[in-house]
Length: 469
Image (cartoon, rainbow, N blue to C red):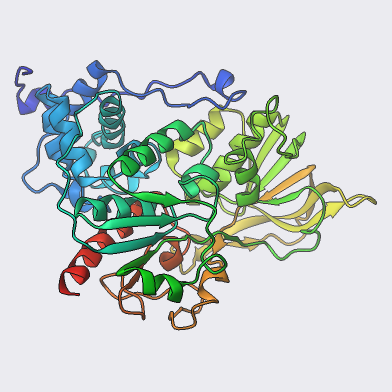
């Protein structure tokens, strides 16, 4: 039991910094950048929480983690209690603690942030999840009574894994069908090793399989099976296959050699391990000057990956300013420290190439910001006569993704919106009774934690549906 401290003493404790690799060293390797809190740092940070009566941080969390409760356990020195509390609310805390945009959600709602810095909730979540992974028996739970119901989950990404973890707790027989050869979805093909080590994802998946979740990989729904075929075999379905179809700029030259969609580029490097240049046969272009188009988290992942692969100049090309970037602030800072070149207020007009159709540059316009657009950000406008050429030999387009029609094309009964995303009601049920959906296939490209929230909410709704079936 830790000694109690007064509210005044809590307010005097500064936010603890996350230990991290040196910027120069990490820009040349794929090891994790953030090194994690020690127990001493975790205790200090936990003591900053003032245990609000109205915990706005919980409402700010898409999976509704009882944040004050697990933090209170830390302050009391009861790490096992903190782990049981956290894992009871969140199926994948090792992952969300690393990649969740806490500054916009739980930490963005933290009362401590009104006059100073919020409690580092994400760092504490990661600390407890990592600690629990090294402790045998801490998370052991009683085997639930079998319900006799079978649920199929399509996609082993954050939404699917979360839903499966919640459903298996209720005694349902859960089978996940994953199109790729490894479970994890965007967690393994999209997010680089230096942000989310694959061993962390594998450990979370292993915990779910030990709890009873079955996972079948290399199964493409829409080809191997269809939704109508699965609906006959299972009592309920949850579709969480994501939105992995790349969006391009629709400018001349995008079909030149040396142009990648960001998800292909990252899949080659992450899932297919092209980053391990000495021990893999997966090809990937290692350009001297790499231009990544976009300002979101995927763009940051791609440009930081290019830097680590050996690019002499790794550039972000973004048509607004840094303040409008949708990427996490921490990721932007890390990119800056690692030497990424930010070409801001710049919009590509054309990809240029040589006589052999290899990329040689980007023809661009300089931009200025006008009035806010529908997203609330100031709309970029072309500065007349500002055309220039940005020399590069690899271009990575990271401006978003959309729904892949492979699954939905084989199930015309599924109602879709104008973007090809699946429509659902307030409980996540689609136009087909017993078939639910969540994550990017419903929302469009969004964050890991929002997908996890959809998975948790859908699992609750599925459980209620099965109870009435």
